[in-house]
Image 1 (cartoon, rainbow, N blue to C red):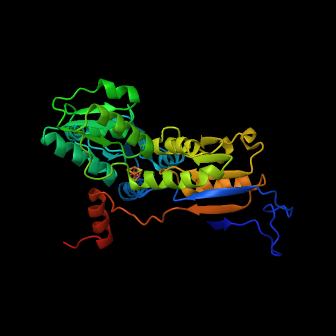
Image 2 (image 1 turned 180 degrees about the vertical axis):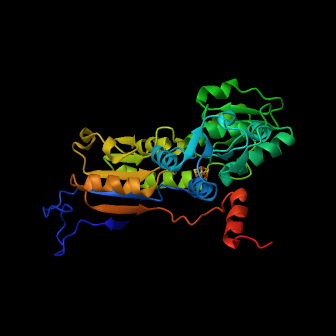
Image 3 (image 1 turned 90 degrees about the vertical axis):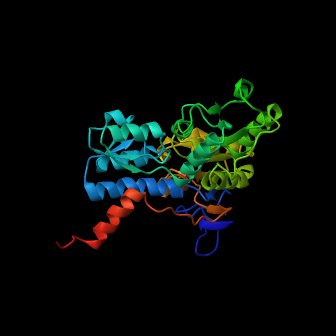
Amino acid sequence: MSSASPGIDPAGTPTIAGSGEPATGKRVLLAKPRGYCAGVDRAVIAVEKALDLYGAPVYVRKEIVHNRHVVETLRERGAIFVEETSEVPEGALVVFSAHGVSPMVHAEAEERNLRTIDATCPLVTKVHKEVNRFAKDDYDILLIGHEGHEEVEGTAGEAPDKVQLVDKAEDVGKVDVRDPSKVIWLSQTTLSVDETMERVDQLRERFPGLADPPSDDICYATTNRQVAVKAMAPECDLVLVVGSTNSSNSKRLVEVALKAGARDAHLIDFATEVDETWLEGVVTVGVTSGASVPDNLVMDLLTWLAARGWGQVDEVTTANEKIAFALPKELRKAVKSEAAGPSES
Ligand code: SF4
C-alpha cells in the first residue's frame, strides 16, 4: 500500500490535511487500477482527433463512453450525440462508440453515405469475432449480458438467429438450444466476474456440454478494477465509486464492494453528489472509479474528502496496467497524412 497524499506534518505527526489537528484515524483507500481503460482512452481521443482534423460538427452514435462529464466536454467542443444513424445528415461524419455496433448499423451508415470512424474497443471486437466464428460453426451462442445494453445489442447483432441473451438467473431456464453438444457461452466485457461464473454454472447444469469461450470475454480493465475494489472493501466503512449510472462496469464496482465486505457503497458522478450523511461514523473511505472516468473527477473527490477530514490517502495497488490501443484505422491514415504535410503536385 503506498501513500498517495499522506497527512503527515513536517514533524512527522499525523494530521488532518490542512488543519494541523491530530489525526482521527480517518483515511481514504484509493484503488489502483481505477478509471480510464485503454478502450475508453482510444474512443475519447478518436472524437477529439476527428474534431481537430475535420472540425465541428462530428456526429457520435450513442454516448462515446458512458460518462456524463466526458460526453458534456465533447459536446462543448462540437460533438453531436445521436441515438441512431438515421439522425445523422447524409454524407456527414459519424463516430461509432466504444461499445460497438451491429453489422446492420454499418450497412445503414453505408446506405446513407456516411463517413464513419469505428471507435469500438478492440476487446469488444474480439467478442464480435467469436460470435461470428461460432455462428459459422452452427453453435447456439448463450450471451451473458445485460438486456438493452448497447454492447450486447451490437454483439448479438452479429448473428441474431444464433444468439440468445442470458441476463438474470431466471433466463437460464428459458434458453432453448438445438443441439446440447453444440452450445457455447460468451459474455459482455463489463460484467461482474463472480456473477458471470454463477450464471455459467447454472447454464452448465442444464447443458453439461456447454463450451467455454476461447479466452476471457470480461476485459482486463473490468477484472482489474474489481480485484482492486475487492482488496480494499473489507477495510472500508464506505466505498465511493466515481462513475455514471449507465456505466455497467461502474455499477458492478458498487456491487462487488458490498459483496466483498464494505459496509456501504455508492455510485456518484461528481464529488458534489456525496450525501454527507453517508459519512456519519465512517473512518475508512474507499475510492475507485469506473473504466470511463477521467482521473480529475477522482482528484476532485479526494479534495472534497480532505476538506472534511479524510486527508490521508493510501493507494491500494493490485495491478499496473500498461495496455494501449492504436487509434481507429480511419484516423491513423488521416493523422499520418496530416503529419506528412501538404503534398506537392
Ligand atoms: S471496459 Fe474493457 S471492453 Fe470496455 S472499453 Fe474498456 S477495455 Fe474495452
